[in-house]
Image 1 (tube, helix red, strand yellow):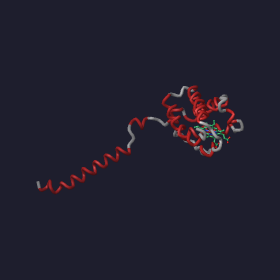
Image 2: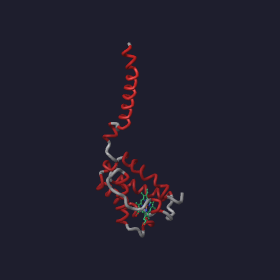
Image 3: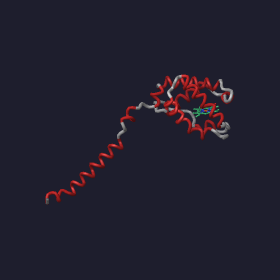
Image 4: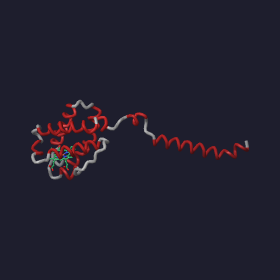
Length: 155
Ligand code: HEM
């Protein structure tokens, strides 16, 4: 009994440290599902697949009379390179986006919400051309959608 009292405080400290260590290791460790899910970049098929989607996307924009006038004087090969790097980087790939930020790029263009929607529809059509699954489409649109507030100036 005396022995138990002496070590009671020690046992308490050990128990608390055990709980603390367990909670720390749980917080630091990913769940098995998180560990096993590859990045969006990998699920899209890496840079070759992203390049193919961007090619189709820009082709759709070029045929879209709602917005193609916007790109009349644009350096299209450079735009494609920037879009590929932007999507690659945003989806967890190894690329570095070296273009301008979205606010600076589109400042003063007076882009409307309708034009933004048109461009997104052209992107979805390109993703469908390559049968990109719903989940990956949603994740990609989820990365690009929030850029709307930096791009659209006419609600
Ligand atoms: C989420 C949607 C959009 C994304 C991710 C995006 C991305 C980009 C990128 C990466 C560039 C190249 C930047 C650079 O060269 O430094 C660019 C340029 C451009 N974007 Fe967007 N854009 C979006 C929406 C739009 C919309 C809705 C329009 C108009 C309908 C538009 C019109 C343009 C034009 C005209 C340029 C070329 C500017 C120039 O020639 O200097 N963009 N965009």
